[in-house]
Image (cartoon, rainbow, N blue to C red):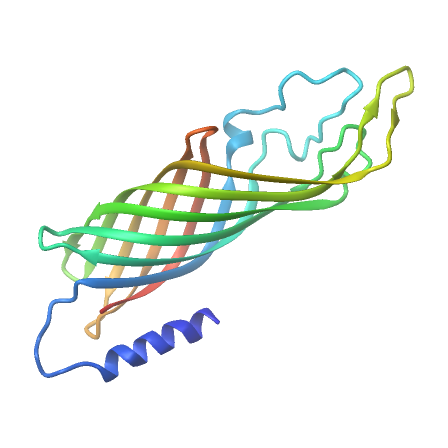
Length: 216
């Protein structure tokens, strides 16, 4: 689907060219790659937990690994600065961390939908562009998992498991850099790396992906 989308945009671009030489002002970028939540690495643990509660070693202090698909639409100002509006869709998967370890062999997933409004500066070196940018992000986070209440005692017992849905909306900042090579036909390829600082949690998400785009 991603390749088809880029092909349609490229076809539109080529069929709309005129004999006049125009400096492109609009940019369309998209990519698919790695996405990870690093909150447990920076702040290991889950606070004060009772002695009868176990913590899964596969989760504590570990990165939640996943993937992301993102889209960006940008406009280049005459000053060389760029304004970008982007959408990020991501998912991470990791082991359960229930208190008595019944589900530790099972996996659960978190989903992220992120709006990113950023401002950056294009640095051009021959056919290469370096685009560092700083942005404001709105993040919608959702997870659904099975859990149970642990009743303390010499032999802890559990209540019947229930499905728990957690949804959060948070604000934060994005720091990202694109490295791009531009072909003569205004098509460009490259890589993007970045990190999200969520105000409520600190540095949380990192991502890295190849990208493809078009100067319109």
